[in-house]
Amino acid sequence: MRNAALTLGIIAGLTGMIVGFFSFGYVEAIEKYGEIEGLAEQVANVGLVQVVAILSPMLAIAGGAMARARALAGGLLMGLSAVGMYAAFGFNVFTMFPIAFASLGAVLGITAGQPDEPKAHF
Image (tube, rainbow, N blue to C red; front, side, top):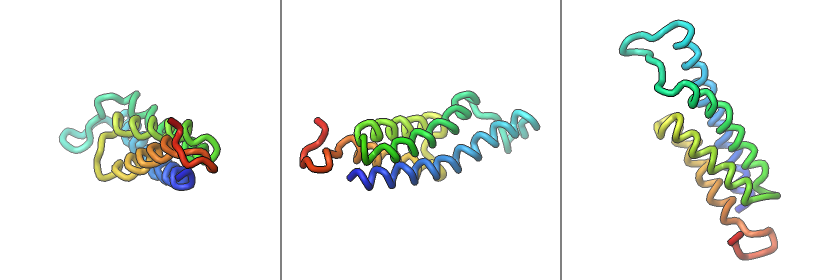
């Protein structure tokens, strides 16, 4: 379970980086060139989108990297990443895989027991 959480966290972070690059770039392009009515309009919360575009992929990758040694902490970081991506970007065709992978990695990390113990953290 820890290896699966590691893999899912890193994949979620990498795909989240792609979403983050485009989201941050879109916000910056609208700031610089202005809105095009009906085609390209500014998002409602610019600051949230920019912060989450940077932090959520980092949290997912860090959580995945921590999953083998500190599964509970890694799972919590991946959960924060999934919640951040959902809050800033919503659930759509571009965010469904990063959110789903980070969420599943969080569940696996939180429920993973010690390597030589058959029981969970709780």
